[in-house]
Image (cartoon, rainbow over the protein chains, first blue to last red):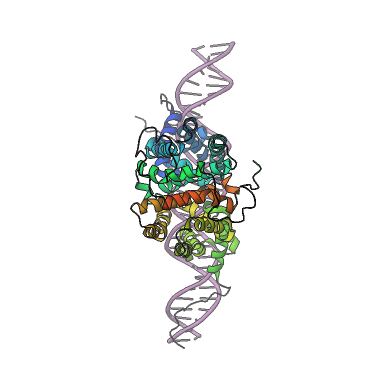
Length: 216
Length: 216
DNA sequence: CGAAGAATTCATCACAGTTGAACAACTACG
DNA sequence: CGTAGTTGTTCAACTGTGATGAATTCTTCG
């Protein structure tokens, strides 16, 4: 029985840093960055708030640590690009939806995207990642004249799925099944990647053959 | 005279409420919601911070008022839907990019989207707006069996353009010209709206469809 | 004029994240 | 065995946030 406040380090408590990280991960994904306060988190873990700063430097540092643990998109993307290019659109949509629909992988990704929208520094991180891991490699594989434009547009379409279905949850996208999405979005993606741009509909003063200021 | 509806003190200095609103609009668009504090804003306007709460109830109320003044997407969408359905994809992309590229209209929209990502209540607002003003009407006009799916997917791709080009600023999308975007994204959007859904493709299978000619 | 009521400010609250000092537990070394 | 050093942990305090209710000024009406 200790009527006195018992200051000082508690003996025998197991790895507190990992405990903080675990609880923080859970709550950040569930309640968002602003929804979690250092103090309430500290109470949850049974620890003083200053200890979190001690371990992670700041609230943002804690969030970054949580993201680092939770998100590894690179390997998924690499596996996607390995397969047959012809079927990539369908496989990409299917993989994306599968990963995002699963809470263990989807929630971390969602909170990462949310954070990136609020924080320019994190946005730059995602931007560079998308570029290095996806757009450049995709452009290399399709390799036609405006490959970069096509790859970028492809990523834009995929990103739109993420944005509308998961971030905004717009109907009917939010409740469509994987197959329905593949069926409606797949053909569009295939067009973007493969079908040669034919300005048959509107010539629109196409002075040159699909050249722009893009110096490759 | 008569029972004038506005009794009490009239603003000696010209309409302070409007002044607050103007400065707030500017700063919110430039620095984001969290970047603007009530106190600093009050200093900017030359007024006590409590006055802002007096007029707008809360910081969120102020932000909502700014959004209300800055964003009117409905009429643009209506005009889009009026025109020829055949050319809608191209016109939609062109209008969207034009509106978002112009700072006076683009910045408010961007800050609205940013806020919606952070705040579920605002997200619901945008969601309902998109639904009522765009998806439902678009589905009515194309009117085939899976019209809603098509309309949703269409909006998803358009939303992806917004997300990747303006929110995330992913290259090469961020620096493509309007014409380049129309050229690469237009055909995909046309497919999404008009080309009959793949009847003969494998509905779903592990590997996805093995090659095949583009849907004819 | 005087009362009413709107516009404005002041003082203060509760809560946020962060920080420096104090202290307790454990380790290493004499 | 003792003592100095390191690390984990807490406490108290600081600054800055948005919000609120009381007090004060100013304008207009009766």
